[in-house]
Amino acid sequence: MKGVVFTEFMEMVEETFSPEILDTIIEKSDLPNDGAYTAVGTYDHQEIVRMASNLSEQVQLPVSDLLEVFGKHLFSRFTVLFPSFFSQEQTAFKFLKNIDSYIHVEVKKLYPEAEFPRFFYEQTSPATLVLYYLSSRHFEDLAVGLVKGCLLHFKQELKVTKENASYENEAAIKITISP
Image (tube, rainbow, N blue to C red):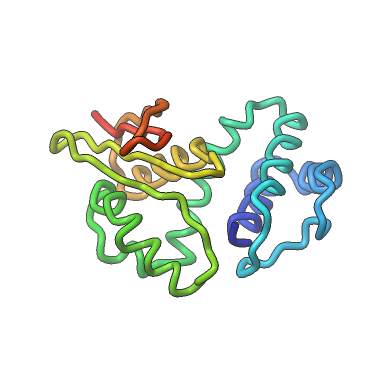
């Protein structure tokens, strides 16, 4: 997993909770690099899982809620770090429909070794978009947070739900965005 996810997670923890809580979760997580991440590095996703679990213990919030909050934070940071991805898009739906076909393709040019979750979509009506999230890492709550962050960015007030599903006979998470 790219280091930018780790550095942004640590920034969110520090800003939302405190530098002391960040230090505590880094210590408790027994990280091979003692929490020294670079944005362009590549790291084992289990390290962020351990940090999120330890953060959950520290702040008494479910990991799923914390990952969703992080997803919103991460999307807002992506708009700052990668503004070119956001200049062409007019709506959240247009942006979300281009995750696999444009965004991940362009990011792969910057980070050839990056592994991405896969997203497929169905526009079931003009007001409803269904995304299918497929990933062995199971960061579906992070994906939901990213979708909610996208809606905030494009100033669209829609409901986001998730459920277990399948897509072309593969296990998936179905994320429905609707009025």
